[in-house]
Each structure stands twice: as C-alpha cells, then as structure tokens.
Amino acid sequence: MGGTSDQNWQLIRDSGCWVNVCPRSDPQYGLSEGIPALQGALDHGMRPGLSVDNETSYSTDMFMEMRVAFFFQRGVRRNRQFKGEPPATIPAPIKVQDMLEFATVSGAGNAGLLHKVGTLTPGAWADLLVLNQDPLKDIRNTRQIASVWIAGNAVTR
Image (cartoon, one colour):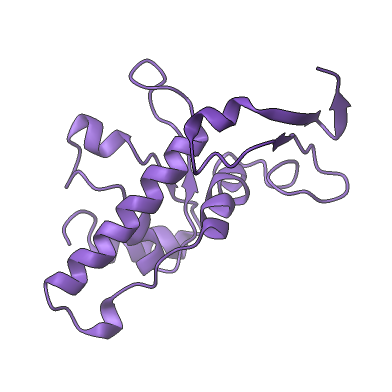
C-alpha cells in the first residue's frame, strides 16, 4: 500500500506524536492514495484518533466517521488477502470497541486533552450521550437520545 513510507511512520511513532485520521477527508478530496491512514497507523503500532475534517463539506457526525473508518479498514484487510499477501501481513479486523477508543481516548490525546476528557474516569470532564436505539443499525437512531451528561452533570432535556 502506498502513502506514508515506513520510515516516516517510524519517525512519527518514535517521536511520541498522536495520529489523527479523518475517514472521509482523503477520499473526499482525493488526497494521497485516497484511503484513510487508519490501517497504516495500526500497522506501525499507533492507536489513531478519529475526527471530522471539514464541516462545510459534510456533517460532523462522529458515528459516520467511525462507520466509514470501520469499513475502510475491512476493505484494506480484504485487499491484502485478495492480492495474496502473506497471512502475517493481513491485519486483524478492528472491533467496535476499537472505533470507540479511536473516537474518544485517542481523539482526546490528539487534542492534548487526555488528562481532562476522553475517558469515563473520576475527575474527567466526561460528556456522555445515551441513545435509545442502535446507531449502527440506522443513523436516524442517533436522534433517539435517552440521557445527556455534560462535564459529569446530568442535563435536563
């Protein structure tokens, strides 16, 4: 796979930098190879964050970003299998838990805010949204909000 060289990935990793992936941006704007760098980061031992890149081009729907990243990773994995690459180079499929980590913990790390946000731990400025329905089954379910907490405080709706 093209894109960033192994040497550059190694430099990024060794410097302690966080990697951010905007799943719809590279395909939208035809950047690099047109594939988000999620698998590249994973291949080089980094847990990337997810974000949106351009609110004027598409919505700031993090559920959509997670879904797109999830499917791209599956496509990259399948492409490596199809090309007959050695089994040791075929990445394991990522899980929903990975996507949630990338959108929360790693995203907070990218912003330099991991000490304040990104986890549900005592003292964190946790914002939490509880949905009544599964947003992975139907995007309209993201509108079925049951409860909201901002900075650890319940918000009355």
